[in-house]
Image (tube, rainbow, N blue to C red; front, side, top):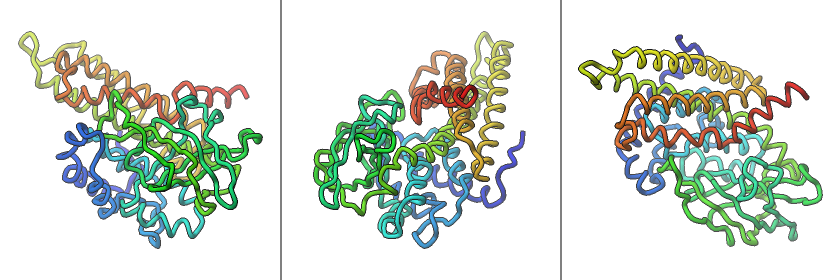
Length: 380
């Protein structure tokens, strides 16, 4: 099916993103995988190219276009090229909404220009060693000291953790208030007591810096409180649908990329004197996967359109996230099988896709949590 959710301006942006990826990322990605993080230069280049903060108003250095389809295009082009390192989707899709919706004018003036130029790399710190997807179990605390807040706690699995200059931290500011006791505090590089732990060694996403963060009596000034005190949990719930849609966009693109790699391989690879693609089993496997890819694409594109129109529900975002990431796992596994022994070799892109895809049913809220969200809307 032909995709009909984009127009000519989106097509031009896709050309820009594809050219940028080919020139500024692909030649260096293998080295970044060995390093465990990307170069800061690629962030600056992305800012200069206009790939960061496309929805940030022009007065702060952004693109001035509030249209998630641009975010989706950048994610799709990164995934199509097998790129996992640059945390641009985290910056654009996850962090940007918090700053745009909650920051004061003074905070926007202070943070958004660097956000758009790539000089400020951002992260959001929700997950803790003992909580996982249970955000209400967060134990990081912040107590009032004059007009400041004293932050203590630790976070883990933080994307952009090593490179981040600005981290939105979810903390308890009122331990007695339950879900109404969480607030968002912005911690900046160089604040005393803010430490990066080890760079985590992951199964996949090798070029993406993921880290543990610790906060020991970090003094956070009042002007770094984001939004209203006590509304942190509400803000998380409001912004998680876009994060989950972002994951779904990447998963749908990953399914299509795996299929393209596998189609090329089975057409060229020969077994028993003929191409692997000539065997009925291969054609049946490809037919099933291509059908799943088409169904996934149709639903994810519909969710993108709903989100652009301001109508995407929490449950539909959850459906998109769990369905697409689950299909991705199945498809990539079957594509590895069709590659045979070569599918297990890391020099083949399908093997790296196999490793990179596994986490997508875990982060952004596990798929079990997604099903719980959907189920609650059905039975109350």
